Image 1 (cartoon, one colour):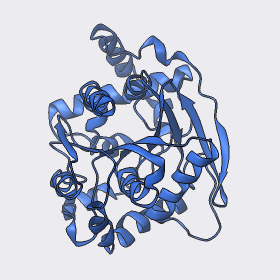
Image 2 (cartoon, one colour):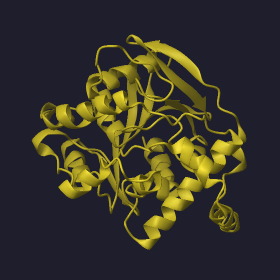
Image 3 (spheres, helix red, strand yellow):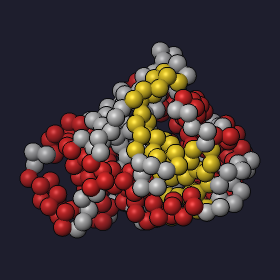
Image 4 (cartoon, one colour):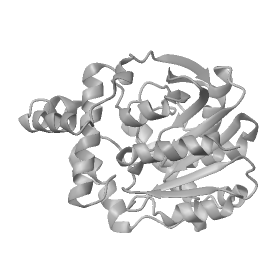
Length: 317
């Protein structure tokens, strides 16, 4: 996932500009403002797991569902509107990966996709849950695959959003897009817009989602937890690119998954090619596959339709 660099600073600047007031008014008129349900205040707690302390909070009621964030993202980076929809029928376990946001890390670099999957499993056990559902995105969907593979006894069902199978089986990111994705001179908004289609509709969707974040942060309904250190980003780059690109075993192990899996993606995803979702869905026995309007952040742009599919998927025997 593309980092939401310096997002806290950008929020402060954004609120000083009149254009965002106009956008906010438009959102209200279009009934896109944050639902009343979102007014609860998150309570951050910490769990010792595998030599680190993972920051997390719980939201909603129902069957437990662990949310696994992507590259350089934190527990605050989930779209508040998506969280509101998912929390209607699920108790969400929202946490920071090791080294990200409020979670600690070890001095040694233990950050790999399998290690982060073990962290997620450790958090589930630390919280006393016997089984959970998985909702994962981008790098988080790579972690989600490994969580199912390494700890199947903890998983009921899994949702993989914009996943990548790894190794020689993946459709690699376009070189130009990859360079742009890692361009440090891009503004935060330019970085953010890469997650959406490069169209007027995509830019408009990015502003809508961004404003939902801004409103939730201002209201205190999501934690102010957006910072990811350069060291953590470098460790995650090594985990999600260097090591993942050399991992052919993940794809091979997908065929042994026995829990139900929903694979979902945006039709215009330029970060992780949507064909990767087809590759993964074809390898996992009886997997569901669904595509939605949007790019890499389709789950924010099309959160209502995705949430409807997730509800049907989770209710299906």
